[in-house]
Length: 314
Image: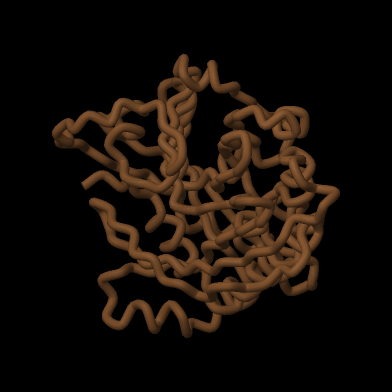
């Protein structure tokens, strides 16, 4: 990735959660539809208007008792001080008459990718952008059902959601400081509206920016290696929290919560691969979760995990 960016050659990439699998696609491979992409600054999708089909959507979340086992392991580590924020996720079987390609085609999201017949995601969350040697990140932490009365104020002032958001902003500000100077929080606790057929949500984001240090300019691979895994879907401190996640979660995340991005020869746009559906032996699984702090309530976190099992087709 460093070589390509130093040569100003465009490429698209996928990096899995554990950073042990990286797929790189050159401009030719993108045009030949090695994967389907719909990003703000690159697409190879046919965006002809088609009527949205009537679709069925059922999810079969794990029981509260099963979820509780991992949740309690996380909480035990939080109490011991091994972590102060842990992003705990699960996978849920879903049934739908939509194919992965249908989900890619009809879902509405800032970032969409379908990779072969393996997975599709429709992510609202930017990881980092690099524009003219400035780097930006937009951590998204904290969601609430938009239909709740006074939802925005409740979300901004909820002690647990606030603690989670402050922690991730602080973590990512610190992460950016490894590769950038003059790092500052430009926008704090912005509220975005996410519309879905099942349930409309409000999500809380902030924006952090800095100026890339001279030694990291035109080295996309090195920058990402420093910053990954993404703090918003891992927690803090990173090394110990990763150990906790690998013990608590009873499945492999794979490319879920990894990152995908496009370098256009000069600038980079990348996203966190959340809102993620994977195909395993002809069955579909939706991977979702949320940040756990010592203030987290079991039932609320379980409901948040289930709230995120949606497809933004409307």
